[in-house]
Image 1 (cartoon, rainbow, N blue to C red):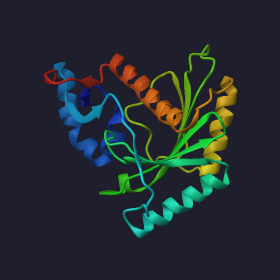
Image 2: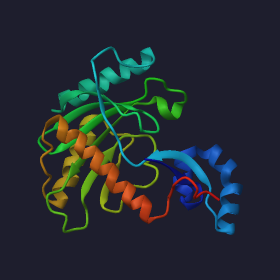
Image 3: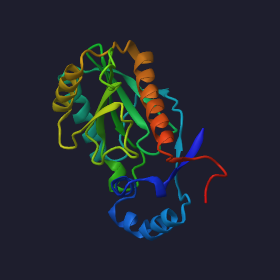
Length: 225
């Protein structure tokens, strides 16, 4: 179900990461006015569920530079021990809707994520993500999420997610740091092939949507203003 982010409910850091520094400054008067008046300010559309469409292999990359970057990152992930599972298109993501799926050991669902139609420097750079769900959540942490994206996730992920934001890390370093973080919490649950890989990302999204709902970040139709 599509909803909209309430810009007035985001933190200053989230607003800047979402819009970029210049655009965030331009919206700041509207955001401040909405907060003072106690009303919402509708922002980008966000979907509360995700669907994954398996794709046939082809030459990926919207530009030669991006194609080379994807090939290099894929090679690094495989060299680090990641097992490729195929490519998916996720139409309900706001950007970078193409994901190459990997398993790293039995418990890590990793993804190389990019856009086939990059329209700005903010969306052109491919990056790597990884998620592991924990067997024991006694510490209050449900899963570990790591990313090499240039910007932190927006909105901020659930308080039940241990987030590793490593924009300068290589794929191998990201996977190593991710696994070390999992071990600090205990043991990760098995992913279980391609279906488990999809489920791991869908459940992460659902966990975050629940947190964003608790924070009052999501606006359904008719709620704006």
